[in-house]
Image (cartoon, rainbow, N blue to C red):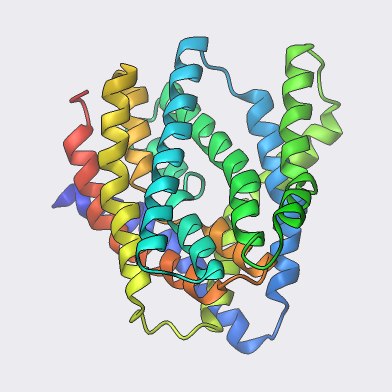
Amino acid sequence: MNYFIFILTNIILPIFIQILLGYGVKKFINFSISTLAQIQFYLIIPALLFVKMYDTKLNQDIVIKVSLHSIVLFILLYVLSYVVCKLFKYKKSISSAFTNSVCLYNSGNYCLPLVQLLYNNPLALSVQILIMTVQNIVTNTVGIYSISSGNKSVKEGVLEILKVPMIYSIILALILRSLNITVWPPIWNAMDSLGDSMVPIALISLGAQLAETKCTLKIPKVYLSNFIRLIISPLIAYGIVLILGLKGIAAEVAIISSAAPTAVNSVLLAIQYDSEPDFASQAVFLSTIISPITVSFIVFLVSGKI
């Protein structure tokens, strides 16, 4: 019980305070949510990815296994979402938003503080940063294609992917790191500062979107999405860990991360491409509310046991 209260007050509560601030400010000041989303999309996330990708150090075996784990988990969740959408005959835009709500989880502003508090270990944090990086690559490639193709042709969806700055940010960081090129300090400090602003701006954006959303939470699709995201996902993640032979802290972090609520980025993408933002907001909102119970249970099951 004490452990549950610790997670609730030290991780969940700070997240909700920022969401509520965004909600309250939007009610009083009619600012543009799409502009806020674009600032994060084109400046803040690329800066964060550049810094983390350039700075993170892991041995090759862990990098390969953790990356494979994240990719295989995404593929299996994507296939499961596709089957569900076909089974219930969801329209194209809902199918895209539903798939993102299941496949894209909050590996950054939820999992990073969670992992820091649970382990206080550089290895654990590095593993989570790697997972976040893979998730962001997926979010800004397949996730963008999925959400944009809800309203566009396949060709237009592919073109949207090529416009994404995150891809080029990651490639640049990898090139500079492989060539041992030191980033000019003023540029590095600017990128680091921009990256640090991701969490509050993302959560404020979510709160502002919720202020414009009728959060009745009576849409069956939201509950189904949350069930897959919070319950089925960590079960699949555990199976992948066994198959890959991933052990210790890296395995624990991979499973715990997979139990995170739907990513705030799914809302940003839905806003950016005008593809069911109400559904996306409700999926994030409800999964985040439920997650203290489900994540705490997953932490209890895996900590020190893999």
